[in-house]
Length: 93
Image 1 (spheres, rainbow, N blue to C red):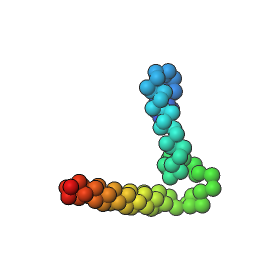
Image 2 (cartoon, one colour):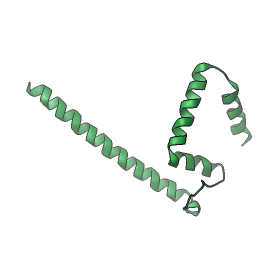
Image 3 (cartoon, helix red, strand yellow):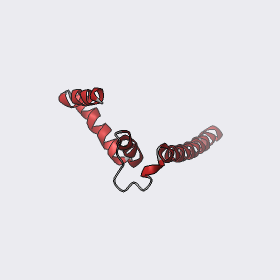
Image 4 (cartoon, helix red, strand yellow):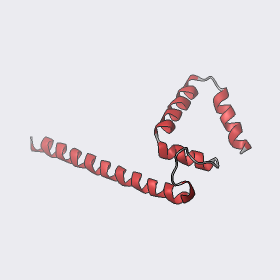
């Protein structure tokens, strides 16, 4: 725990522009991704406000990860179909 707090102190003590930009962008991403935010809160030993599955342990997070991966596979598949379709049109010309 002390190591984590020390690293956070170092991260927030710096004023280097690239570090500040990366830190801000990272916090924005975490703030938008409720699943990731809940994992961080759970790892800290607490439960997210309104978390109905607080007693489910890691299984809830595992299920969300599987759902997220499934959605990502669907998006990649769709993008692959679009690329193949576009390439086929270019080749026909």
